[in-house]
Image 1: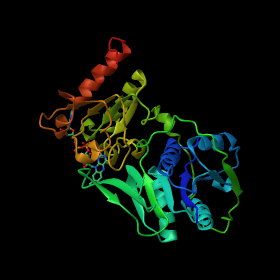
Image 2 (image 1 turned 60 degrees about the horizontal axis):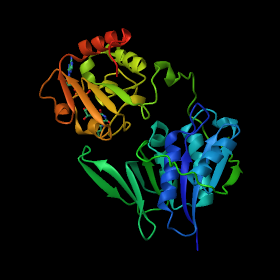
Image 3 (image 1 turned 120 degrees about the horizontal axis):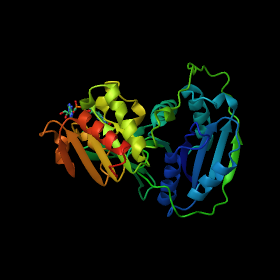
Image 4 (image 1 turned 180 degrees about the vertical axis):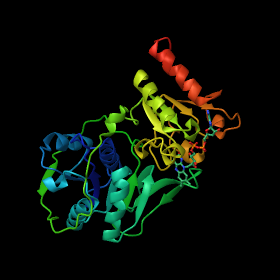
Length: 336
Ligand SMILES: Cc1cc2nc3c(=O)[nH]c(=O)nc-3n(C[C@H](O)[C@H](O)[C@H](O)COP(=O)(O)OP(=O)(O)OC[C@H]3O[C@@H](n4cnc5c(N)ncnc54)[C@H](O)[C@@H]3O)c2cc1C
């Protein structure tokens, strides 16, 4: 009987450690294959030459049966064509049933390139996964602007999906597995690399704490009018130990970088407090804040749709309110 295999692409960050979503996908896969005999959860790491022992141990504890490492200094900077080549070669050798990527900036680019090369289907931006009794992947994703969920099944193999970060949890249970490690070398040197990195500007320069882990998120929309007003949210976040997010309206207007967009095509947050400044509250934005405990909205239009979804609504000028909050926090007279 052939092994039933799920392969997860491990996204390495600039900190030389995997993105949280890679662990979330391994943990979810472990849960999905619990009742499937002869199954294997594999992780593919593509990256520069570093010591991967700790990373392999951490994947092992989430339930990975095998970690395949393709390490070469040519992979120091992310290159879509080189990474695609390495992943496709491994997948051709391993022939998994299911392949999962995080729906991150990298995963959203890489997964379609891999799917096209393998001539298979891909369900993008999923919020849930399950496996049927006949071992097929059912991938759930929001549709019609977040008003409905569609359950999609690829007819071709491997069945592929990208999954949003933060929808599955890193398992707390530590699994003891004798994880196999396979160091692999894929010749990508003949592959055309049509990208060169001129400069790397760390996202941390914004002093923005991890949006997905923050207890309080200050999100800004197009109603903040310009980049300078938007930047005040970073100060609020810094003063409270929170993080800053943006609507697509703010990202499209150039006030904020796409990495911090919240919503259907951005990230999903699950903070205790979420404050929306000058955000109208379209369904696509709301799709990313469903799991927040308390939603506070500041908008100068009393009929703004966001008020229908907010626990607390403040009608007023968002910029003036942000300025007051910054001032009070600086004087430490406002505790959050
Ligand atoms: C396929 C698809 C995917 C999408 N994905 C996303 C997504 O992931 N995330 C997302 O956010 N959007 C997404 N959108 C876009 C979404 O539909 C909205 O267009 C977007 O969220 C609007 O951003 P906004 O609320 O900042 O801007 P607007 O809709 O222009 O709202 C601005 C708000 O600011 C208020 N305002 C103006 N001035 C002030 C002031 N001085 N003080 C207080 N309030 C003020 C206004 O009353 C208004 O309510 C998507 C759309 C599509 C079609």
